[in-house]
Image 1 (cartoon, one colour):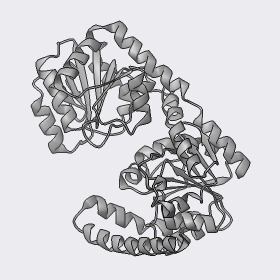
Image 2 (cartoon, helix red, strand yellow; image 1 turned 180 degrees about the vertical axis):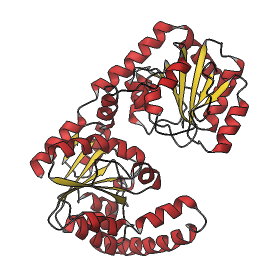
Image 3 (tube, rainbow, N blue to C red; image 1 turned 90 degrees about the vertical axis):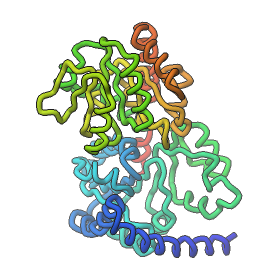
Image 4 (cartoon, rainbow, N blue to C red; image 1 turned 135 degrees about the horizontal axis):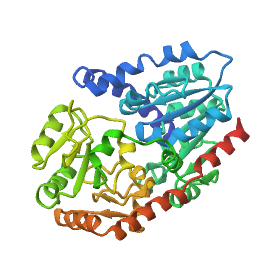
Length: 417
């Protein structure tokens, strides 16, 4: 087994260098990969310019934007609980880094270096964190190995594990070794805890998902948007958030063929590039207006949100919500509309998202797989106020019943740091 692990480590390191070489070539032709590679050139200099040898550091790592939202409540509490520590925040993906590179509660925000032995050693020498906090997943063998060698306390928060992962396969011994780095696992569900227990990890706490704390706090802030109030004008409004083309095809057919004049629609597409917005607007036969319009038509029936950063606030105005992505790789965040007490509609690809599975079972979230299903459910939500309000109340109570994960994690950190 030891020989096998050595071989796998050797092969992994060879593959890492080959991958870096290929990414450099691809970056010449792909904007996202170019951001991915060029951003990493600044990582070490950023850390050196802000972190000194005597600084106390707590390091948070998030793969992308979704993981950042899970880690955000912990970062906020950490800032209050450990005011003398600096916070280092790293991202793997440009979609997280580019959106949150100016996040005010982190002292340093950078890309995670690519996972080579030399990068791992240099990164941890410069950052020297007292604790490393990985959000949900991201298991990089060289970085985890170096954390273990340096006896740096490392925890996983809002973790989620599945039987299909290599850790739980007969051939997964090499990957399981990486898990030995973690001082503690804070997981989202019982299944994850059981899977870890089965392979010998008992340093596991079922704490839930920190995103519940995040979205619950959102309801306490000022979510008013004057232009949305003007558009809604106290009428029933469906908000379609993070919609993809397939989602929009269903919604547009309903709007064009079945919607009454008393229904309003706000569509916040996942793709807000000019061409995509133009095609979306052309396909809608009812009156439309856009966020970017100099003179918005507030009497229009459809409002297209061709900007980012305001969808959460818009959900506070929804009578019902359609959350996109369910006809693709998976749904987007359904906790944001749920926290405002809104009944939710999604496409069929949701099984990897525990909150969606839960809300579907509770009948607060409706899964649609055809035009007829969408049409029938939208008509019912519009006409049956009691049904709509009951589904919304279930959503809101589900959020309230699942808060508290952040406090569990912070209490652990206070004992360990």
